[in-house]
Image 1 (cartoon, one colour):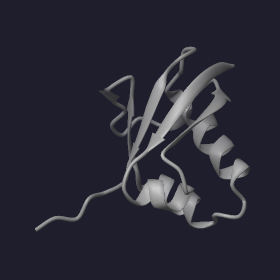
Image 2: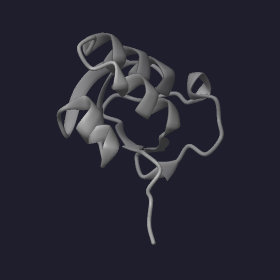
Image 3: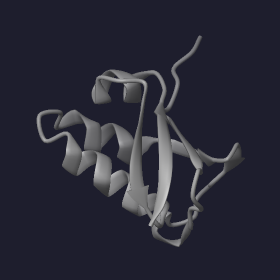
Length: 86
């Protein structure tokens, strides 16, 4: 397991109630599962994270299955919810 930092933006930050946190994870799917389990008092978090785009060390994950995105120790994950604009 790697020590990973996840940073939340916009609606993800609101749903998590914080801007970032560290978790132990081997894949992006592990990160998502760990933070949802860590915050059972924030049921909206799972929904928001399910709609997010992700960057790992500033590289877009795209449409890859989160279970296939490996993480190294010290990885930075950015959770970017869809943005509305006009």
